[in-house]
Length: 459
Ligand code: PM9
Image (cartoon, rainbow, N blue to C red; front, side, top):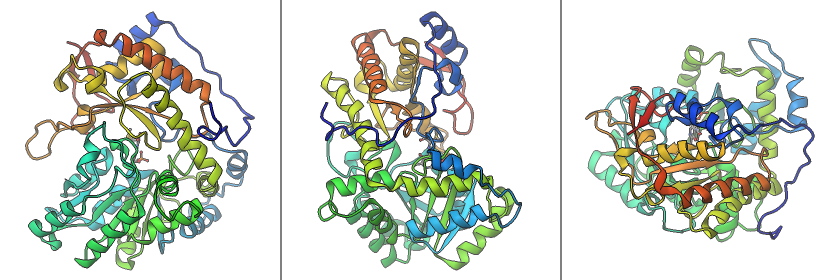
């Protein structure tokens, strides 16, 4: 294992949390009781938890020290000023509005920037993002490049916006009927795929030519910056900090889930340059989140986020982070396991269509595969396919996403390479016995964001 391909952890571990392995019989019962939904399994019943990289980060000693300096005043906490200053310095936007997590920022942005009936083009949907857009009368249109929907195509910037698709929406619907364009960096459901600076710049130019605003989903913007440094001409010698600043220099604002690249466990924010939108967001934040100086976060959490953000843009950290994820992907590819290629920034996505060719999409192959992986190995993953895609708001019919995947999401600074080996072994074993994976059907289908709490049984 070359340390250039897969660098060692750039930290020492000084606090540990014990985990335990349960028996296969126990896991069969637990999975059944959880309705074969990995979201409904208790954390204590999981050995390696790859459900999500959201809020599962390990904080540093410096962040924990900052927690003790929490100023828990209702208004004007010093930690807020530290966070605001840090976000402005790293992202370059004029205004910052704090929120309890990413979807809080999405709710605010959708409320202040979408008029019912307007279109919101974006590079592939994300569950909570599209929910808030639609809940506020918006119509999501997917403008990601076609290759992003094919798990087998290995290209450097698979998350890029297709400018022809964007131009077509503008021509057909009229610029005035477009609320804004949402550009996610990286694109979660495409496999954590990055967007190039060139594409961000050209999308911004096209939007601004028509007076349309462009907002970024900044959730994994540091991982995106690493890919730019690694793959885009002219960026190899730039620092991650410089690239992050450039990513946002073309945008009018962003939403951020602080639970991912900010290296914290909770929090989020909305950034805006426009004064009127900022005023509207400040009026709205007090209704849904809290004062504009905490937005649903405790002072100590804002301090941890300010410090986490500074750590996140350190070059050696982010290189290790992205390459650890790649290590798991490479082990699976070597064994012939079908995954989304290339490996993205936060997770390895199993291609459930190719993994379970004996199941139709209506038999929920990704949901079934995630449940079976847990039963086999106590490794928890997440479905990202037809269940996550939900139903069309207008017709009530299921969306049928081309990508039917199971996400093995790597929390930041939590697991070692040896853990990755154990996960790879578990997936490879299951792949050898893939014919035994049985399809599922609904027992309970929630009306909103059904993947979180839905329940299933074997067909
Ligand atoms: N992402 C994830 O596991 C957690 C919720 S869905 C299980 O991937 C993007 C690109 C996200 C994201 C959350 C949010 C919402 C917005 N954009 O979870 O509300 O990946 O902080 O952020 C999750 P919050």
